Amino acid sequence: MSDRLAVLPQYLLPKQALTALAGRLAAARGGAATTAAIRWFVGRYGVNMDEAENPDIAAYPTFNEFFTRPLKAGARPLADARLVCPVDGAISQFGPIDADRIFQAKGHGYTATALVGGDAALGARFEDGKFATLYLSPRDYHRIHMPCAGRLLRMIHVPGDLFSVNPVTARGVPGLFARNERGVCVFGSESGPFVLVLVGATIVGSMATVWHGVVNPPRPGTVREWTYGEAPVVLARGAEMGRFLLGSTVVLLFPRDFGASPVRFNAAWAPGRPIRMGEAMAD
Image 1 (cartoon, rainbow, N blue to C red):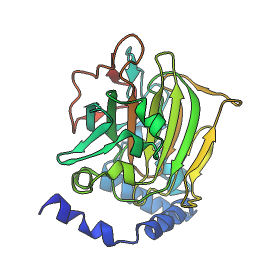
Image 2: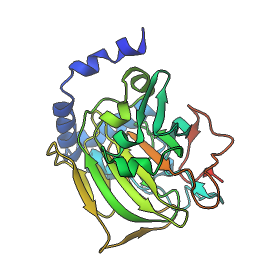
Image 3: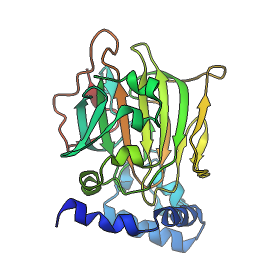
C-alpha cells in the first residue's frame, strides 16, 4: 500500500473532535480505570518506567500526568557539545535549508515562512540555514528541553490541521509540519536566533510551555502571538521549555551563520536513528 493511500482515512476523520475528546479523557481522574489504562499503555508501547522519577504507575491520577512524567535526576546528562538534543525520540530529517525550503520526505517539502506561520521576515532569517525534525512516539519522554541557552523573544500559536506526524504520514501528506497546528518559539542566543517549533498532531490534546502554561486549548482558529521584550524569559542549555501530551514532533531552525561557524550536525545522526535528550546534536 502506498503512503498516500495509507493516510487517506486521516483526511476523512474528525481530527479536531477526536483530539478534543482525547484531551478530556487524558485529564480525567478515573481512579482504578485510569491506572489500568496506563498499565496497558506501558505494556503496549514498552514505556521504560525505571527512568521515571516516580515509577509507580498507580501514582499518576491522570493520563496527562503520566504522559508528562519527569525523569530521575541524572537520567539525561548533557553532552559537551555546542547544541544538545532537546527530546527523546527519533530523527525524522535534518540538514540544510535550500534557500527557504525544508525537506520533509521524498517528494515533499515546505518553506520556513510557512512553518513559522507566514511571517516572511522571520522565515527569511533562516534561508540557507539548517533544520532538524525530531519525532516523539507515544512511548517517549514528552518534555522538551533547550538545545542551548536562549532568551525567548516571541511565541506564535498557528492554527491548523491535526494529522498524525508518524513517518508514514510524513511521507504521505504534503507540507505536513507547516499545515498542522503548531507553537513557534523564537529565541535569541549568543550565537544568534533560532526557532523551536512544537507541532501538534491527532490525539495530542495540548502543548504547553514553562513560561505560558497550556497553549492549546483554546483553539480560536486564528494566529495568536506573544512577545517577551519587557518580561524576559531566559532558559539555560538543557532546561525544560515545554511538553507534549502523548507525542508529536519538534522542528528546529538555525540561521546560516550561527555564531562563528555554521551548525554541523552530529556525524552519527541519520534519519530514523533513535535519539535521547541531552546527547550531542551539533558541535
